[in-house]
Length: 125
Image (cartoon, rainbow, N blue to C red; front, side, top):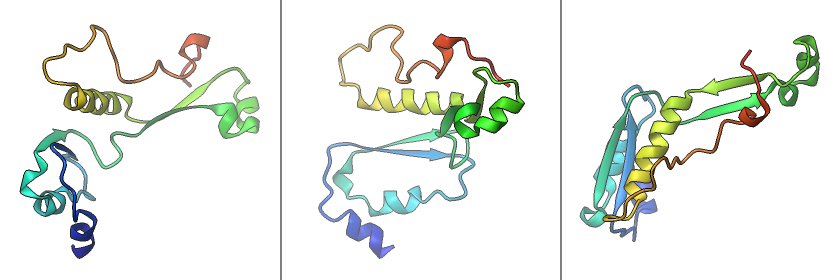
């Protein structure tokens, strides 16, 4: 589309990462790849999942609805939405792409914070 070409006018990075998901019916990466300048240095990452695969939320039931939390007996119950594993895999692939060449990543380093409420011993519903 013309809007994409206009948005990319003057875009001249040394490297560009494009992430695609095999079940993403909203994906327009083919159009993006066609519109990028030849100097963009594109690296394409193909992942499993849908358009929302990289989204993962863990919410306290009391933050969603205090009355619902009371009906469920209070406490620190959480509700998980999305695919935490897909989000973690995407974060790791992005970190791999961003990490400077020739510099080792620290052992055990992760790009995601600890699960919300993990330190408080929250339980899954």
